[in-house]
Length: 253
Image (cartoon, rainbow, N blue to C red; front, top):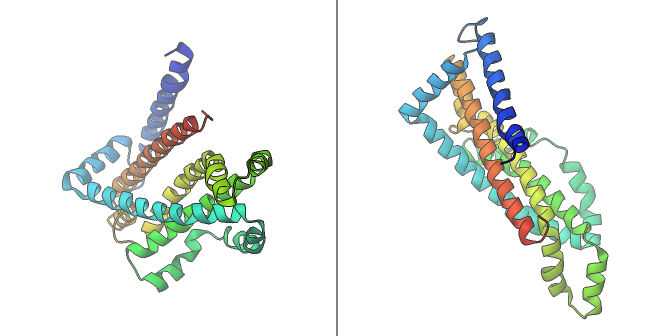
């Protein structure tokens, strides 16, 4: 690793983290532990949760809930986006409705979700699903619409049928750009995972954070927030690796 890469990728990020922890610890000295626990107190609280097994249970539930919701959004949004991007008249008909629904915050759907699905897993899954669905759908539509028409005309000149054209030209050409939307949707969905669990679930990291408030365990609250951030970083990193691999496969990396 070159000196410049070592500085930008390792040294500077760690210096920023150390500085942040130092400021946090200093600020904690001006407040009670219930108001602002220091880094050491938060780590102690996390160790306590881990020792009892509660932390691992909530992490497992959150990851499972996220995987289900995101998978459902992917399965629903990608095929629909391919169809709408390919068929101009379908997009013209549905486009205005999408533009009305898209700006509505997924959290605004929560009262209806509780009425429809009751309290528990289903409302949180529905909220996470919605938060991922529209970014994936719109990025897929955009990916199809951006395909160079020259590719399509050349294929048609060689007598390629519509079905083969869609399968062999449209999908491969759009897929690397669809991956960008999938990556973006992961971050948005992860944020709404915590929000959904805070509002209606009885388990998961979001529930852990809200429930800890009831016991004035600010160290657990901030510990839960820290775990959410670290897991979000891990999920985004894995998705980034997948995106790079697919880009290399399609000659874009």
